[in-house]
Image (cartoon, rainbow, N blue to C red; front, side, top):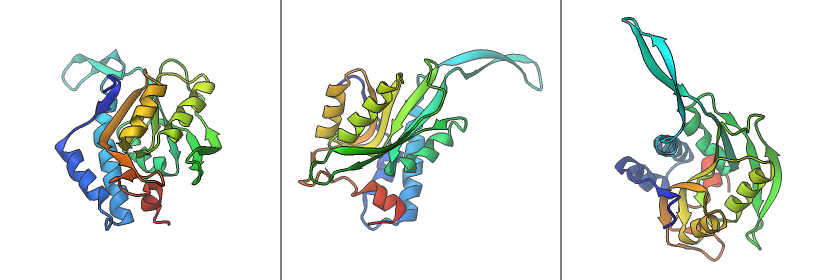
Amino acid sequence: MNKNIHLIEHPLIEHKLTHIRKKDTSSKEFKEFLDEITRLMAYEVFKNIKLRKVTIITPMAKATGYELSERVNLYPILRAGIGMVNGFTNIIPSAKVGHIGMYRDEKTLMPIQYLFKYPKDTEKDTFNIIIDPMIATGNSAIAAVEILQSKGIKNLKFVALIASKQGIENLANKFPSLEIFIAKIDPKLSKSGYIVPGLGDAGDRIFGTK
């Protein structure tokens, strides 16, 4: 496996993934599990975020502490990526949120972009995270990275819950230096491009649509 693919394995993530996959899980429960899994994954994603030393005063004495020296920008791929935003902002409330709007052509399975908004702060000291619950064919993920790179946005990471083996390989082969954080890799895609066993359409399950 590519050294930049980080498979995050934890008993709590496995437990919550099992419930989020079930077809009878309600939209409310789905969103709650998605938020909880994202929060658990965030600790690993931010494992190497840069810090700076600061001097603080405790109730007892002067002490050395640490603060984040990197800002955080999130780029959810619409619609489903929105479901992962709270999991990150609960950990880092100061994170700014851009939006990458894409939908998949059902015949070609290729993404079609309809929206792109990004925060003003995209300099070197920014931790830029693309988020989407699923990496199926990898086409949308690749397009999202290309969109950000075209704006000169660097220090990119991609975070998803579940990827197909084909999808994550496509993304990693296209961008060998891209750090990818994933909770589970499923073996295959259906003929219509859905991850099997997967969890269905994440956007529909988040928003209760068909």
